[in-house]
Amino acid sequence: MSHLFAHLARMKLIQRWPLMYNVRSENVQEHSLQVAMVAHALAIISNQKFGTELSPDKAATVAIFHDASEILTGDLPTPVKYFNKEIEAEYKKIEAIAEHRLLEMVPDDFKQEYEPLLTSEHADREYKQLVKSADTICAFLKCLEELRAGNTEFNTARKRLIESLDKNSDPAVKYFVDCYVPSFKLSLDDINRLL
Image (tube, rainbow, N blue to C red; front, side, top):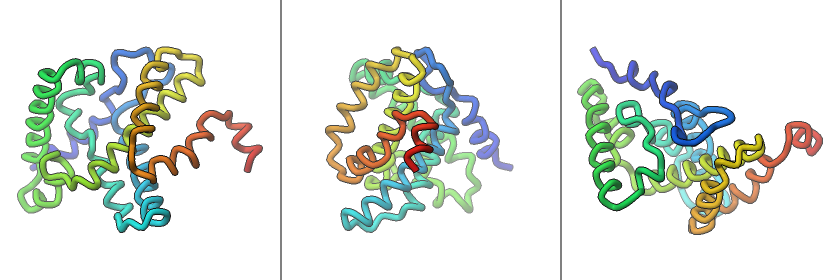
C-alpha cells in the first residue's frame, strides 16, 4: 500500500502567500496546474521561436510536481525562506527531507520514474530552470490579479517579480510576458471585445 496519492491530494489544502492578505486565496494544487500550463507554453515557445528541442509534456509534468514537498512542509513565505543564507540553507535541507519522504511512498517498481519529479537533486536542470521561470511568471500573475482587485499588499512582490523576470535570460520568458501577460491587466469584457 502506498500513501503517495493520498498525500498529493492534499496539495489543495496548502495555501500559498500565507503571510499576505489575499482577495482570493490560492492553493498549491491550482498553482501547480497554472505553472504546468505556463511551463508547457515556454517549452513550445522555446522550440518554435528559439530552436530548442524541449519536451512540452515533460516540462508540464515536472511543473505539476514542483511544489509537492510542500504537502509536508507547508508553503514557507519567500521573505522568511530567503531572510538570510542560514535560513535558506536549513530550509533546503527540510525540503530535501520532505522530497525523500514522498519518494519513499512510491512503490519500488516506479521509484525510478518519480525520483526526478519528486527530488530536486535528481531533477533535470534544464527543465528545473524552465519550471522556475514559469513559477515566477505565475507568481507575477497572482500579483496582477490581487492588484486588479484593489489589494495593494502585493505591490512589493510585483516589483520584486518584475525585476526577476527582467533579469531572466531565457528569450521564451520575454516572449511569454510580452505576448500573454498584457491580457491579465484587462477585464473579461475587454478581452472578449478584442477577440
